[in-house]
Image 1 (cartoon, helix red, strand yellow):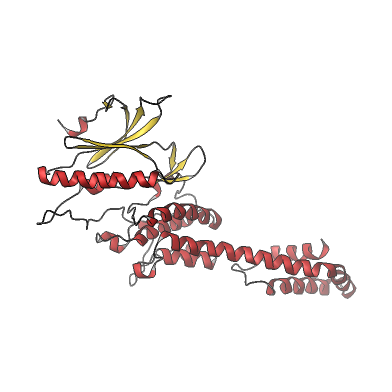
Image 2: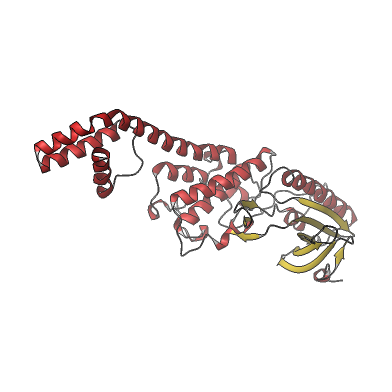
Length: 354
């Protein structure tokens, strides 16, 4: 029978998982929404159906072995991290393969990262932090996702958390081929253009290939441009984006290193990129602590400073205020962003007359 008729809508697999809706159709298989007939309330689940093409009996056995290995990895990840879908079942029927996974009720990030909306630095920082935390767990198991993109990041409805989906087992088997020694050829480019670095395009992904994809998602959110729409430096291949946005130098530097075309210059893993990102946050917190200490030290003298300014006249008062604020700032760490004149004076006045 034609593969698109199996499993058809309404079919029940293993007398338990009833197919109710087609979610996505792919080149080698389809993804369905199903209900679990064995559990109270008939909760939803996701069934991924796959049928490898053109494999003889020997190659089909190897494909089944890889399928089982992949399912084991997914089971290990999903059962130990709340932001990775749990694997409920995997089985084969003849030449057909099935994965049954947890259904994530929500929407993917392609509905949030839009061309008409440019995210703030703070929003992108929080997004990257959450994604990197999940992918760092994946990388701890020496697993490369290979297809991190907005469509594979779900915003879960019940708690607003990011869930990483689609670990690509179906794609791996779907384009499986073998060498003369009947060994599976793993040097296959899997991923999405724009989010794949050069080494992944050559079929040799590394842990930091995922880091590149996450960095490109951050740049996309900041600029409102998809990766393939960003201009590239013809000599280095680097995406040109920095002048399009207003972000701190520290944050921009982290993003630049995440998306370096040369894998050797990228952060080694998601954990390393996360550490660099958190260092920015720690630095900002330290600035606030030092500023507060300096202010506390000088507050007992605020009346004297104010009286001095009044006695010297309006013009000189402004100078005193400005000098006082500069003193506070120069006794802290250097600010990443230039001080706007309006906030500069307002902050100065608040500090003295408070």
